[in-house]
Every structure is written in structure tokens, then in C-alpha cells.
Image (cartoon, rainbow, N blue to C red):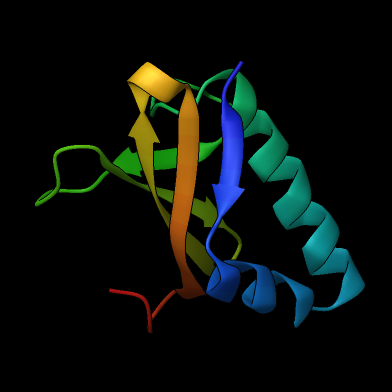
Length: 87
């Protein structure tokens, strides 16, 4: 099982959402603990084109950019924003 680590600006982004969106985001982040790779059908994840370990998680109109650190079993979520503003 992977650990989830959030950058402080990601925590701030999640906390500023409404309660319904917060719940959806937290549920998706918990699913990443079991399998953070795009092969997981329960999460809408894709590999980033110009990144070695970078992935994107989609939760409604929100996008989360994260890296997987295999030797530490860590998912580090470094960016979060609305769909049009993150790329």
C-alpha cells in the first residue's frame, strides 16, 4: 500500500472546496493508495507526456498532478487546480 503525501498548496486547494467536492477528492485519493498507476479502472489517471514518473488524476473538473516514488511506496501530489488552469 502506498502512502499519500500532499504539498501544502494542494491541502489548501482541497480545503477551499465545498464539502461534496472534498468528499469526492478524498475518496479518489484513497483509491490511489492501492494502485496509483493508470491501470486502475476506478481512478481516472493518465501518464503525463513529458514526465518520467508524472501522472494526472481527474476528479470532476479538478486535476491533480502527482509522482510515484517506488522505493518509498509514496504518491506525492504536487499540484492541484481546475481543469483549464493546471496545464
